[in-house]
Length: 305
Ligand code: 0GY
Image 1 (cartoon, rainbow, N blue to C red):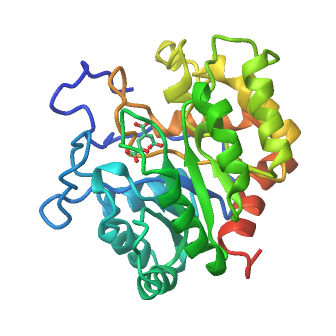
Image 2: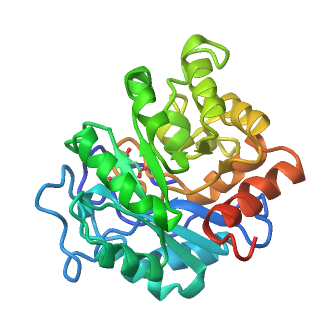
């Protein structure tokens, strides 16, 4: 574990020695949520960004992939790079067929640019509604983008706070593409898993055939990385939420590391421990195969699925 004081200069340094997970990821596992940051000297951060991370480039990402036994990555454009997708595209291209990308684009994006992104491996765009990260684009702009990407067979990745779901849900439901939600819609895990908030999220997922990333226990947890005590079952308060989603929507759940873990100020997660979270939320081999291999392959590499 790497405990860092909030906002200390190294708070986003790549963890140099993630532990070896006790859980062995199945062959073909896809990390569907990770980012690259820079390196800044080659890929400057966007002027409109709301945070400035340290570099977290593709070489580090690929090293982590290999260390954890991950086969493929989906690199999601991070807000600190705005709509300049070059660092993400560079990483996806460098990985060959072992990576796909999710981009951020503006409503005036040209069809030729979308086609170029597609041939680089991009298969979706991200719409971000988290106010500490972005000034969210107007709905009309997002509708324009969705209409432009739909013919490519892409999906929209949605990042929002759970409190905002009631207001946003009708807009989400009206989008013409498949939908993927980040981090289980960011539930407040101090509330009951059977309570009205999470039930509302589950109903939204059910009604709209949404794909759900059961990611970021380290971001959602209040109890935190208890593995400091030598255990490997950290972030236990998030387990009931992940497990519920896996049980109800086993063929539409996705997993990922969220490396390099932007904006975590209380601790830098041990990615080995995040792998060990998987069997707690997906206890059976079949659930694990769907979550880690079959589902992401169907969404991102349908020709091989
Ligand atoms: C995440 C979470 C965060 C940041 C970003 O694009 C981003 O900057 O996604 C966050 O701060 O919650 O999914 O990586």
